[in-house]
Image (cartoon, rainbow, N blue to C red):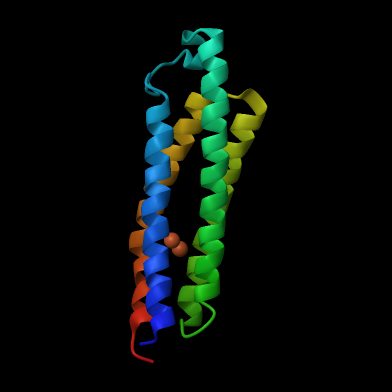
Length: 146
Ligand SMILES: [Fe+2]
Ligand SMILES: [Fe+2]
């Protein structure tokens, strides 16, 4: 087991914690909760403006961090990982990218932060499933004796 592979696993895990923390911060930025059907209109315009800028920036940052992370994992898969896992894992990363893209579209088109937060919550579920179904397996390959 090489040190570089151990470092790769540590980096993956650190990123996962960071990504989940970013989602948590996005969710708590809006204190109304997404059950508010009127969306952002319930807040005074000044508050809306402040909130939108803040949430939009956080979501863009989260998307960037997630795409970079998935790319990093794909690079880790290039050596010593069975082709079947690599193909399935990369397909799953593409599905996450699609989900993130639709959140971006929602934000750009109607600026509805509550819809975007709902999308981010769905990503949290996807990410948690993804870690359990793919990333833990990748970590095991990386830590397996060569
Ligand atoms: Fe991951
Ligand atoms: Fe992954």
